[in-house]
Image 1: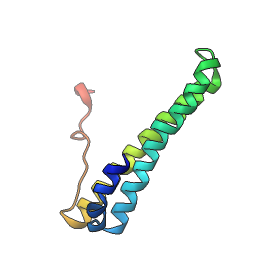
Image 2: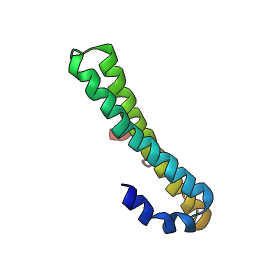
Image 3: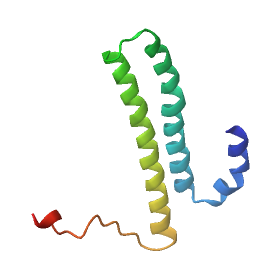
Length: 101
């Protein structure tokens, strides 16, 4: 990962500062959840029962950090597009009730 990060330094230098910081921050959140809490979870799993509150909490925080990292990355991409490429409009569905409800 360190080699890949070093290879991407020129790419990050060409990005606007706010976009680069968002990408780095969201990547740190994702990797922190995926690796950091995975290691903590491995220790907890060795002595915790299946539905132990501590085990479930560690797993929840791990997944939360990963999803926040992904959401931050999507935000960075959308912000970059909106500022430097074209306006971005996100629309979910057509506004009509599903199945005629």
